[in-house]
Image (cartoon, rainbow, N blue to C red; front, top):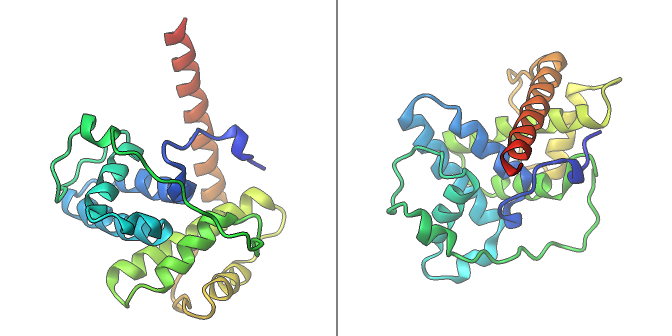
Length: 205
């Protein structure tokens, strides 16, 4: 199992680790238009996950600044606001006040549960469908980190519906990837992280 202490430190804690994963996925999209559409979707999720940011009149600009900071300014998209690294990094993020309620399934984590609630509230659209699919794949990946010996795709789908209070039901034609692909992806990510850590250590010397 991978613990938070073993993971790379989040640049902004308010949005959780799964939003960061969505950003990494967006960076890998080759089509600029599709990549930009995905960035807009991620900003919508960020607004739902951290609703306190909406108290600011310029909260949209702030969200885009935070998006760029979390992407290390590597997300090449058509932003609706001018991108200035200096200005963005001066934007002080507010801490998200997490609920004291218990997490239903600890292996999914609070951030993923919050994301499910946020996406469940979105109106029906292609963007919502894409986000739901990403959440489903993330849930299986998280499940495999917790238990690789026995994974039931139908159970994960049922838990997604449960966590969304019945507002998200995966279509019958939705298919999860084979468990081996998720495990290989996790191993590759861990290896990349270790390589980057070694490079940083060498630079410090």
